[in-house]
Length: 195
Ligand code: AMP
Image (cartoon, rainbow, N blue to C red):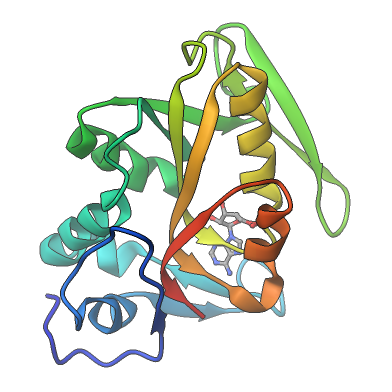
């Protein structure tokens, strides 16, 4: 369970209007497991499953991710772990949830956006009818790394005629420069934990 005394090395980033108890980010960090060399050598995978399995930790995470984002019309989750966090955030904010999925997973007509990876490319898709014109959209994911996935997701939202209000993530890997890269795309990043 989350306790005020849980240890964690994380630094908290509190976005405008976001509120949680002062001890919360460190307690959260203690429920995220580092898995070295997954899915490939050299990657430190941030495994959020212990946090999801903890009812207080999961609830506090959803509340914090939603905090300060009252004026939105839709919440987008990025496949796959983004879905787990974005759906309850949408429910909490009283708005609809929209999945952004990897290529070929959505059944109806889609828009696709391809972006650069270190080696090769990846493509994400959204249903073309996911948003009304001018919808204010909050994007949610578990981890912000280089920002490529989030930038492509934001591009899809904009191509549908909607507006991105912010990206809200559980963990930001600051050394990979995602926040700066997304600032270049006009995207405001809110992170509960910055590493
Ligand atoms: P990026 O496009 O580089 O910002 O990568 C972000 C996506 O990759 C997110 O959907 C994350 O779920 C996943 N990801 C990247 N790095 C990690 C990591 N170290 N641990 C867990 N997930 C990661």
